[in-house]
Amino acid sequence: MATSPTILDSDFKYIDKKGNLLRTRTELTIAQMLTFLEEEYEYNSEISLKNGKKVKVDFKTSKGLIEVIDGKDDIKKYNEIKGNFEGKVMAVGHPKYTAQIKELEDIVFYDKTPQTGSIFLEDPSFSFDYAHILPLVEKCSILHGHTSSVMVELVGQMKENLLVDFGVAKKIIKEVVNIFDHKFFINEKYLKKEDDSHFQIQFDGPKGMFDLQIPKNTTYLLQGEATVENLSSEIIKLLAPKLPPNVEAVGVYIYEGYNKGSHIISNISK
Image 1: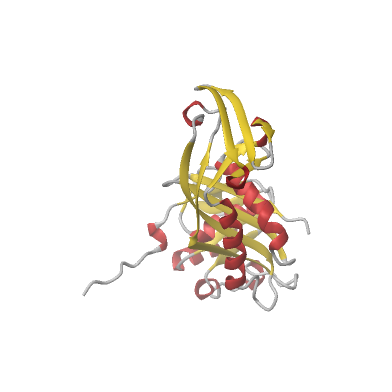
Image 2: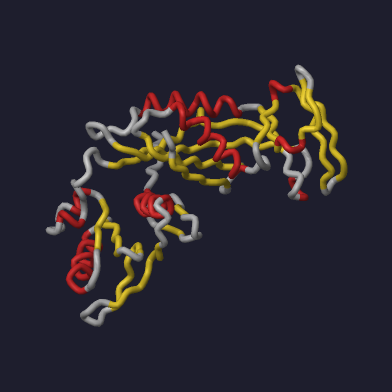
């Protein structure tokens, strides 16, 4: 009888915007939040303690240290840092481990109600096929296409321990992603003229002059080049007005083919 393979956190690779290879999704979330707050940090940074020992802490910031607690060894290291470091130290991790640390105020802060939380959603239906041209990039300056998948992260204030119902969020995301499906994306500055049904796209690129007449209902004009980064931003623009008011930030990952893509996170102004 065939069995399904067990997928562990160690099977995934988490990379922050600095190019650091992180160990867990918890570390990735912390890195994303620090980036969102525009707080500089060093990952896996070596520090010197008052007892003369040198240890590596998961995140070192200008305001203090953050240690991710994933096991008993992390608890031991955290307690040593806490007792021998002049500055703020905070622990983040699974309750079954962090509950063993006595200084609860350094783990969870209750001075803000409701609490800030985040959820992320991946689903096979969050994928779309599209064509684009990047006239400023020689290799991509001809008409070509991709199949891309999307992951969305929502950040905001929880109500009764809930940020957004997964079913509600999935419906909103799917509606937006469907707008992108089987579309041709192009920078609006290459629009030469239009009539009731067609756009005429014209530009002189590395591969020569392009002059295309394209149906309006299959074309998506962008403010800027049709890069995967710009598509991430465009999805955020479409998602933002559809989300509940307690959602304060949106992160969108778009994978362009295999093992590459873009991640943009943006604050929402309601």
